[in-house]
Image (tube, rainbow over all chains, first blue to last red; front, top):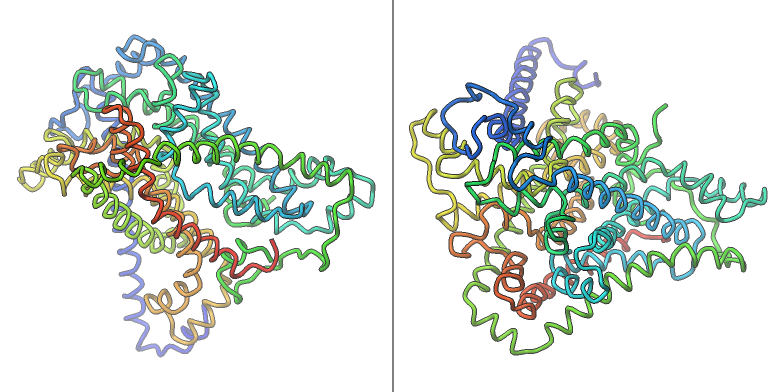
Length: 296
Length: 304
């Protein structure tokens, strides 16, 4: 405790303690509000997913389904539900697009920021500014030209068209974050390695990449979530067979006849991989966001 | 010290030791220069093929002046402009300010608050499309929200998507729900960089509670708060999924924003040029924000 509380008169201690009790009570109330606010739509997903009846989206006054059933989940996993006949194939598409977006963003972003900030390529700051300028045009505003251009490249209904778009919009953030984090790594390390005869590629592989792990983890998760969860680009650039899972529920969003228990079960299954990745990389992510080293 | 780092450390008192290049730039030697260029080529290619070319294509598609006359004549365009301003203005500012406040709450050293944080970041991980659909069903006449309203308070809930202002409000609330966790985490990271000594000495001067926030925390975070708000504004102007999947633009296209209106022009009404014109009409707002962002990043910059 600080000097201030030591100097407090005993008479003033009681209101102080009362005040602390109020703070604690207040933070519990706030905690409950945050819990309800964050979980309400997730709870609604479970309510619908656990209903044995197909089209039940109404709230019937039960806070928990009287007869919870895993029928929705079963129908998704066995691909028996309508509109979800190719669920696992679409899940695979999501994986393909998500993983390649992640790998390419990390690769392109780290190479570019290594050249600009570590090798000090002259005029490199132009590249950083170009990255920022990309944000002047929101991704959704380029969907019409993209649709036309991908068609002329012969990439209609091709996952690579979506991957290209996602990498384009993920790399500016990657470059900005990597430059920011890279400035924490001492240049002496690079110089020492160079004196020992290491080439630029070796410095990149042996020094830059390992030390940048926290920032790379943040970039990887950012890129994966962008591609995994995007709606507009896959919806426009892909047809049903090559679609990602995130799009299917959206396209039927006002269709009361769709099997909503299975739809919501699919949505719940779909959240598991990103959460697993976030959990696996949590130490790096914390270090990357707080601009600190990874605690041992 | 690089610019972004200045930003994160939010001013001189919090500066960290940054490795500094010895003054005097050394030129890259032959092989190194070739490697550096090779490293940059992939990103330059992405920029040219997937940013500049589509952007040029968009400008070319929307170059006919008569398109803009068509836009002004279309009432749904003016509605969409007003909706975009409200969506971005309210959504971004409420979200950022509450995120700033909550970032302090989540840094309280309590075990249960750490666990709560894991639940709180869930919206960021859930696909926007699927969360929006869940909200859409929740706000239906027979949905969870109205069901609880009548069960708990005996109120007959409104038809949320039959009213422009309720629909717009729902869109804004879902937008805040989805993106507030991300910015809260960013502000938590910024707050963690404020050294405890500053708080200790401020406490001696009597700055605790709200006064500490107003006189110590906020001034130190003001720079990064502004930067994050600018970036978030750019992203929110382009937000498509929330409006498209929560209110669906209804009733009668009265809650459409520029992104969804453009989508309807292009893919429902087969007017792609008009769609691009509608979206590019936001450029006079977007470009000053980006320039401001660049300047804010460069003012504190010594070397980049």
